[in-house]
Length: 148
Image (tube, rainbow, N blue to C red; front, side, top):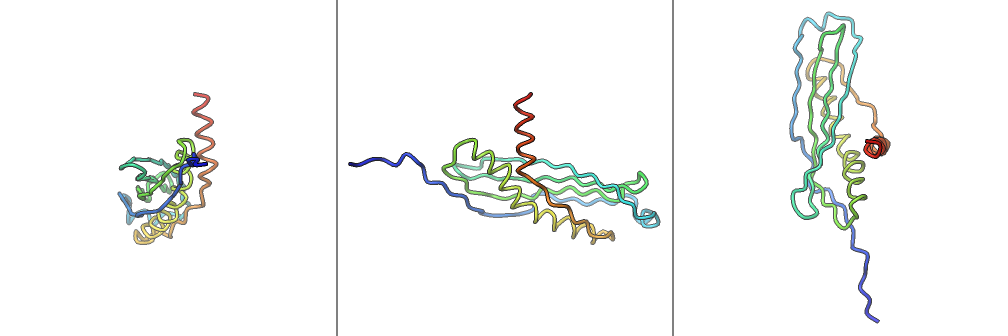
């Protein structure tokens, strides 16, 4: 009996990881160094997926970090940490989860290291971002989409 395999072969590969865009601004240097170091940090994040060709995707993790001290901007960092991934043979729902959970989990440590380097090169203590639970964020966003 010659049966065709109904389950496609799945694969996931990291092809390349890179910084797509990076910016560091410290508009109140050197005066900000006189302020008492009580940072108020805000982090905004976005994940973008761009299909480059069949089974090849660019995933970008975009972070915007603002640090204010006494309502003055100490620094502003914008970074787009990106990667090219081969994601083959997964159903659409799994593909969305891979690009919204797994890929950002891979990219985040690179972005985190770049943020720490930028802050220390700017004369500030290195900023070590806390880990992010991308699975939880993905599930929250998915739940919001269902209620919208």
